[in-house]
Length: 207
Image (cartoon, rainbow, N blue to C red; front, side):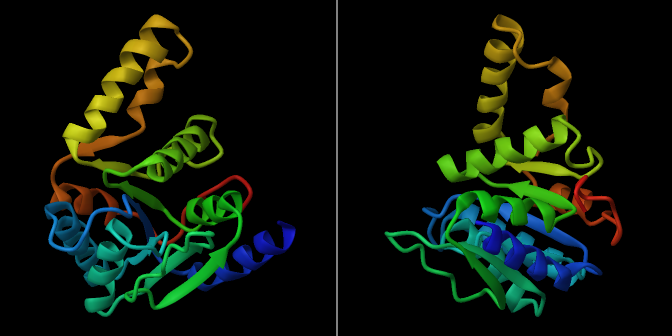
């Protein structure tokens, strides 16, 4: 574990001067799906703005975002995970690093970026969503870093459950903790939010 973390932080040094956005989303969404096309278009827009695009390096939404960035001539980064049932690295990654431990991988996905964009996904995407939400709500990550959720039908359903159950019924989550995200159906709106990130920002308390 310690060796993987050391390797990961060495890898981060390549991007110290970059503006970086991490994009999360399902590995199951195939080429030709409307959400795949949106992720690819957003990856292209970010790359054309000079922003480095980072994903988990796998198929689906990850592939789409990497593809858009790579085809636009940008930095297209994959933070991969080694699985027994191998999640292949997509062909549009032009810089990558691999991990055996999800814990180490998530640390690097969090530390590398100044903004986070989420498309609909499964358990992995939700795990990464709650990881970043927890880090921001506990001030481990600067609350000024944008978190954008694309797909209101998907994300507002989760938000309503959080509002009704943890916030109102059980009072285990403060209401203002639900204000750290922006939810939209527009990749243009997402782009306009994250393109404003500066090159230098205090991303995480340990950096």
